Image 1: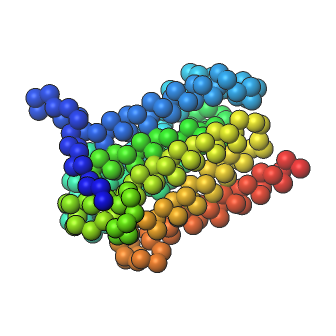
Image 2: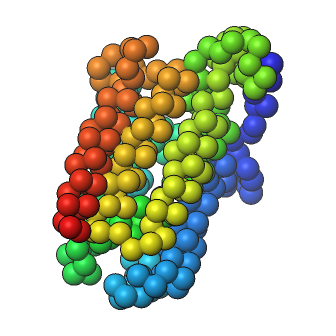
Image 3: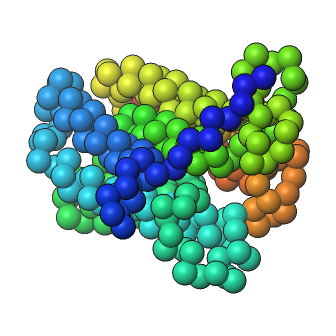
Amino acid sequence: MLIYPKIDPIALEIGPLAVRWYGLMYLAAFLQFWWLGRRRILKHPQMAKAGWKVQELDDLLFYGVVGVIAGGRLGQVLFYEPGYYLQQPLEILAVWHGGMSFHGGFLGVLLAMGWYVRKSGRAWLEITDFIAPLVPLGLAAGRIGNFINGELWGRVADPDLPWAMVFQHVDLQPRHPSQLYQAGLEGVLLFIVLWLYSGKERPRGAVSGAFLIGYGVFRFVAEYFRAPDAGIFGRSDVISMGQWLSLPMVFAGMAMMAWALRSKN
């Protein structure tokens, strides 16, 4: 079995200033969003056809950052640990300690993109179709940040599993390194699927629908290897809070995909 390497969450200290790996992972996520967005605009003919400009990325990134951080933190507070944060409200601001909900961040980005729609005059689905392939690698970076923090560990695994890992700050049982599973599924694999799918012109809403289906399915599967969170519905080994929140994404994605393909015809 492997032993969790106890990575120092602080990457760099300069006097009283501490730069944490978790924050650097978010920085990497935002930088890759900008780089991939720029490449998508310059290399994909349908982007030029739709009038996308590299300059628009700066505004999109700003709105996205606000949505991710505000929504992700509030999602963690409301969906997973309302009791804890009610007792320690100042901890809500301590985002460097970890604790960011994807589903909350997702809702935050949707609201932020609605704000951007009013500024840009573009259709909401046009914007979400553009940003959907740019998101997954950022999610992978976030999961690596979870691994470095030693949080969101996996369920107990078979000791014979070659990559079973002991998280000694939790217990001495072999566990799935579920953070890395999620980085691979919701991050790398989802990116490959969406990048290839969006490489050709698709009906409006189809890429967004593919993102919802892909993330929801991959997250639902990965949750069976991750120690379930209590959440607002209580702890369950059958269906976790993350799975409850992912199911509506899958259904909404299927409806959106059906609508998009029907509109094309």
